[in-house]
Structure formats: structure tokens, C-alpha cells
Image (cartoon, rainbow, N blue to C red; front, side, top):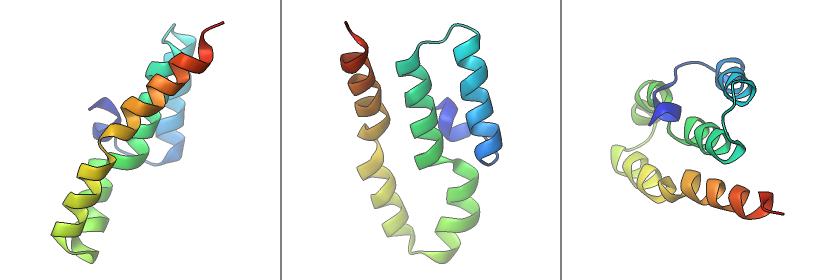
Length: 82
């Protein structure tokens, strides 16, 4: 939810991810945050997607994309284990 609620462009999203890593956040959690931010940014959905695309398509895209942050974090955890 934090990724989707973060307003701003790539400078903001990636900067928060970098700060989280430096502060001791785990790579899988930061990857999940960045993927969620890229897929579900609320301001982008409200300001750009819903006005230009049918709402049904936007909600379908969001529903189909829900597992991706979790999947990305799981893959990062699997790859990161020695």
C-alpha cells in the first residue's frame, strides 16, 4: 500500500527505495515497494488512467497486477538466499 500511496515520479519513488535500503530495509521489501509504486500509483490512476481509459479496463488492470509486487519480493527472496 505504501508504494501505491507514494505521490510523485521516479525521482521520488526510487529515492524513497534507496533511503529504505540505506536505513536497513531488506531488498525484497524495497523491490515490492518499487513494483507497487510503479503499478498502482493512486495519483496516476486517478489523474491519467481513469479519464483516458474505460474504468472497467483500469480496474481489471489493477486487479490483474495485484500479485506482481508479492511475486517480485518472493523471487528476490529466492534469488538472495545463498
